[in-house]
Image (tube, rainbow over all chains, first blue to last red; front, side):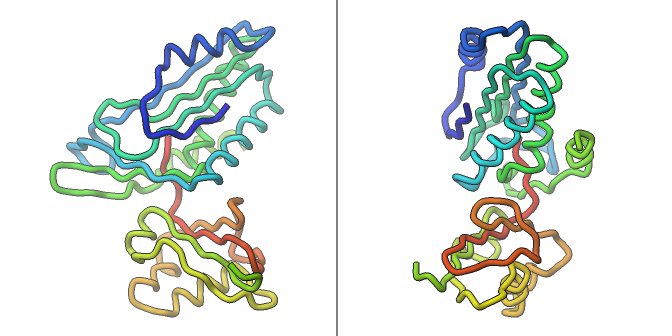
Length: 148
Length: 86
């Protein structure tokens, strides 16, 4: 299931829901991304996140489908927030249920890496007196291409 | 939206710098996404950045596409900077 929302999410509740969901689940891997104080700029106090409604959900569903072809995925959950976020706010949650840890880790990491370079989200960093659209990182592209 | 119109959408930095969220272009036979990009860039000024140093990503009907991909009436074409979510 995929949700794009402006509000916060409860990672513990999402974990519990994943735990209750899939038959044959023996492992759950989760990832949560947070707003940090330094990115392209230093002294970041918050972020603004924009997305392309409709396309975003379609792209993420494609990533879950691709993960399910490569690994044993019993259930997958992706939440991504948009709008104005403050320091240490949760941005993104990816959770994957699988029979075994290897597939759970790999599918969770793949979905997260691929999301960063293919899902239409854009981050703007905000400091005391500046706003700056974040540039895509070579390191993110490289991580994503490692899965090709 | 009429059948011979293509809706063009812009996101993030491009939306802000072009001060344009959406516009319409006429669908001509054999038109590609790259043709639309070149036509808009030829307006000059801030529009020139559509064919500048910074890469522009393209989606047609909410699916990633390339400059050579063809577009037709009724399509939603989108131009945006490389994505930075997560």
